[in-house]
Image 1 (cartoon, rainbow, N blue to C red):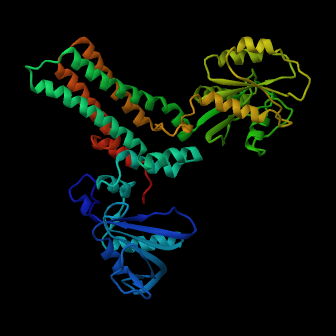
Image 2 (image 1 turned 180 degrees about the horizontal axis):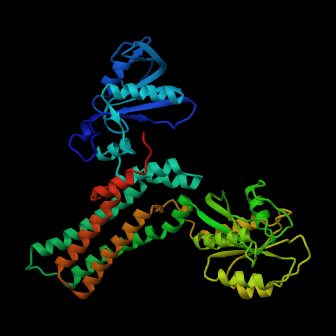
Image 3 (image 1 turned 90 degrees about the vertical axis):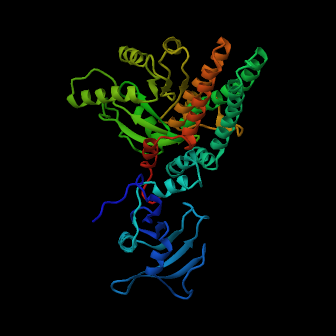
Length: 470
């Protein structure tokens, strides 16, 4: 068998690719997708329409059967849709075969398509062709993955905003503004007898400063965007028997953790995901932090400390019916530099804790009184978590472009560095050639996000994240 051609080799666009576009398992419908110059010919060699004669009309479903050409026997009843370029996902000729959603049926049809001359698509190759053929830019291509992986309505909206081109529009606006400034600078370079005078410097700065401010605004949305896109991890911390597992169960609305009056019941870290106002939160119920000789509990405490360091923030659970003790103060010391929220549990019992002592330990951290047993104060706890994580509420501002991708954010920060260097150079009166160099670097940097100047190895890393068939 000849090796499959890499997308980097000559003839990449000449290959016809195929893959299952639906996941493994049983379902009502499964889809085999074909794209490339031979898509129509391959499907015609396998498809026998019940009524409509070949060739098929574009963008119309046709009912019939897939036939095994070697045996002449039907494989499955199907609906086939031919999609003629350029009005397709990849801007190539495409065919989608909709069959019954059993794995063996899908695999059989895919095998027949491969035998007829297609090759297996690589991860993300359909979307990569859409990008290479100019249907979408790179930022929109990345949004496809985010759309598929979205876990909340907010992360879905961010992905949809990016797929619709909102981010790309803003980036192209910034690039156009940079090009105008660069043209102004290069005009002075081309005509050295007309040196940049103070008025021209002021004009250039007047154009560059709004660009730097616009990039800063986009970077400012990243932390919030990342939280909605990827979620956060939260460790529930406290000494033994303060109600950590009870709190986990009430937040999840199910008996996920075992709750008993016996200290040290939770020996390992329990992880579950829920969401607060569209923020995916991975909750970690941890073993109580205390000194113990039990080897299993010692291992649980060790794992708890690791989870504390890895988590984005912690909920510190205290027993509101008892005074603080040495175990509490040792926990406070471990969490001194951690983002945290204090949940004083057992609000249904007579108070025994000193609030002023807690406030001395946590002068700026939010404090919420709850009863995990009676389901009291839980809504207030959720609201406090939301306020702890979200400060600007960019999601409520339609004029803002939300940046949620770490690659995009890093490039924007790098781009702004070039713009700031140019502004600094204008203040110091350095040669216009150096200013132009910084602005060209800024343009190239922004181009990396939308795919105009993106290195091939970066493209490979991006599309490797896709599933095969997308």
